[in-house]
Length: 115
Length: 118
Image (cartoon, rainbow over all chains, first blue to last red; front, side, top):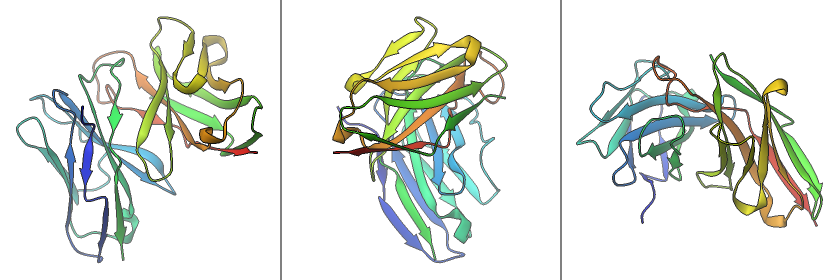
């Protein structure tokens, strides 16, 4: 079956522009996670969604970052007024549930470069 | 709060030699621990996970890890390195108890890049 897919694979934008990153989770997975991977900060949790529950936004670095998940499936991470420090690889993962033993399956990531 | 520390940002071994990648955790509650591998320009792939069923966990590609509570460690090993094992490896922890904002998310170590020489 299909794994987690993300689009675009690469995005180059100018400072101050808004960007949208898309994640398609594995069908049937109720939990969806966004992480950011950067040279300086390593792998950081950003946000996760679990079914119809309120998302856990505790990892979002600023109010320029937001995410939504429509219909319990596809998710979009939006970064407004991008800054150079937003340059990173944004990884999406999904799992059947959000429990501690549930394996998170990762997509290939979107590499964001802010000029 | 939980955290993991990976000792050594780079490890270099010869093909056929033992691979040992170190991970120590810090958690106020029983942790669930994971090792992921990342090949260049790819996402993360699960190698193995500790979920308290057994302290010695066997994973894919011949890797295994042993949970040692007394040492707060979860080191990853492989008896004989292959060239194809060259990648970056991440240790990660999840809380085992429900509730709170930390539940469900993975907290990663800084990663260890494994280089395998012919």
